[in-house]
Length: 154
Image 1 (tube, one colour):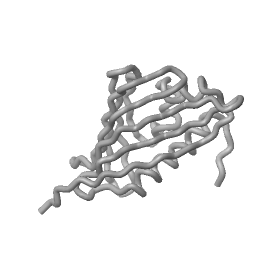
Image 2 (cartoon, one colour):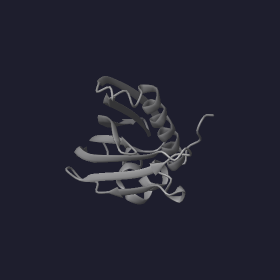
Image 3 (cartoon, one colour):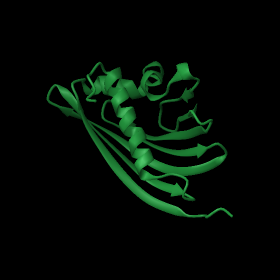
Image 4 (cartoon, helix red, strand yellow):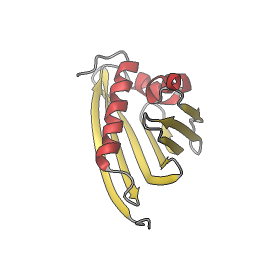
């Protein structure tokens, strides 16, 4: 029997980039740029990208054990070069594992950018954990840094 439950959580990741707010925003808003850091298209991941308020994004990727993950995103608020707010669900194979609201706050910081990523989550039926989601976004922030041409600490 499946344990039907909801666990609420949130986390914030802060990063400073030498890149300008325009460059950071572009890494999220331009499909070709986002494909380079957000998913590994060369490894078979797929993504659709409709970056506008009310627009949808969907993605599919698999991990080594054969598990396939799907995300379904809708953009709720976009302020060019300043913020992106989106809601998304994650599905593992055929089971929904979470629903989230995420905010990408892009702040000018000197000649660079301070990015504050905050996600509020509802983990469903014990199928996902905060440490997994935060770890995934930490990896994505490292990939974003590389996309922006910045060195990433090991």
